[in-house]
Image (cartoon, rainbow, N blue to C red; front, side, top):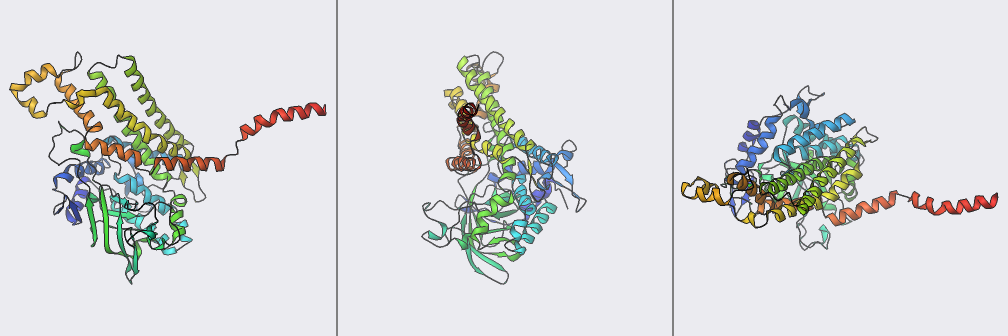
Length: 493
């Protein structure tokens, strides 16, 4: 029990037979499918690093309940030190994937940990729900499982609630109760990396209204549960691209999927919330599943932004344009954006609070500010890469061209960079940049960063309304009232 190795994770992949559809066909062998093979290896590395003496004490701890070593994603944070331990885990995982894989195992394991730590909230509605989430936390902790989630409804008629859709079960909902559990039907998205995970957890953002009761549900299931269909989006790479030509897409393609539940049975012990609009709407604010995973996504976003900024700097340096003032201005802006996010993370971690149940939570305002800035800062970094690279991003030869002696002389002559930068070095930098800023792989990363936490316009409006509700604008009142008070005091004298 406790932390697993990459090989053990891969063996779990090989043992399961989920119903995965890719390009109009059923994938019979998940592990050997070219689209999934390298991403599986990248996730396996994250499991292996738990056993690396260089990192083990930084990203794992000894569980007091079992005496076994477990990942820090399963740590109940009660102190500043605990938050730092989790932050270190997030950063180590993010650096191993350059922040390009948003749904590494730590993310949802933190979500479940937060739900379990705040099971008191579910106790108010149904003690079985509370017990179920605590038991599920123990199960995934002790088996070191990898989860996906699907918390968004399909984009059908977005002007209507779930219960108002043309078909009752367009959005996932409960069909009926059975002796063994509940039967669910309908769809949810975006289940990132679903084909190569162990389990899926379902819950939803707030926004339910009366009539949505059947759609107010939260549960978890093995990814190969009968009746669960996984429909993958079009791949961003075909699984055969070389690492020379596509250094990122060849390794870090995160498959997203629509999950279709065709009358799937959810056992009662896997139900965390059911048929309760109020509980579903309060799940996010009351269980910490906004702040705690926002800590992980903030660290990951910081590393992803820092990586993009490094790419921009390398592109500029490789062709000698970073001596121009306007390029220095743009690169300076990007470097400062990284420092803004880093500083906000430190504020979030050090200005923590302890709730009534002993849970340490990072500063929510700082984390929400990161969520407001990253959807603007990351696209700006991509824009700068595109601007600096210009037409050169479209004109890179392939690795096979470099291997051809007849072409090599011309390539070395015409693709070289500034003094001291060879053609191969410049081309490799530009290919890296194009993977990040031009290819479908990079555009998916861009769209992901804009919307991974929801509509950025709506999120910022919610943040403002919360600010207005909690602030009394005391400084404005003070400056307006002070002259009046001075005049009154003068009259009294």
